[in-house]
Image 1 (cartoon, protein in one colour):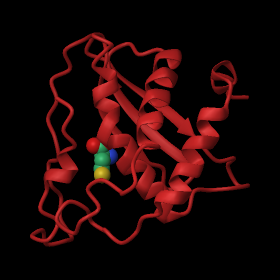
Image 2 (tube, helix red, strand yellow; image 1 turned 60 degrees about the vertical axis):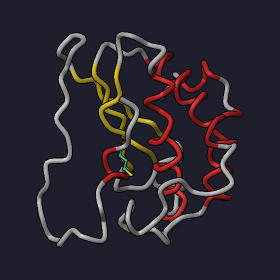
Image 3 (cartoon, protein in one colour; image 1 turned 90 degrees about the horizontal axis):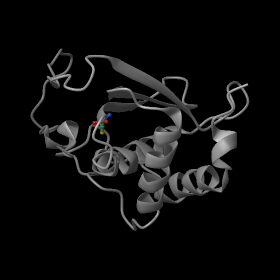
Length: 156
Ligand code: HCS
């Protein structure tokens, strides 16, 4: 399934604060959840500002599941921004390899660059529909795509 559950919630109807069960997913590959640290900005040096990290979340969330369909052994559970605003956590069902995640992210960002609007940026589908910056989000994706794939595997 490539739907984004959050985009289907009617954000005009909810009454915060609350706790809502946002998903139940059958772990059908190896029963193991894998978590990846997708880092765009250098910690404590730079960061993604709220509008651009938010737009990146939308652009990545909307296509990452689709580009993961080519990999039978993995399924995306969630991709969400880090509170420190330097990147995202990606939670995956199945034994995903870093190289596979880098390939999937590359395809997803290449697709994201084609957008001339922010998907699901309406008050119905999103909790802060005005907080977006497509141009700067595209700058971050272009920066990411310029990186050498082998370098993206180097954490330290
Ligand atoms: N983090 C969510 C998208 C929220 S807009 C997801 O489905 O990956």
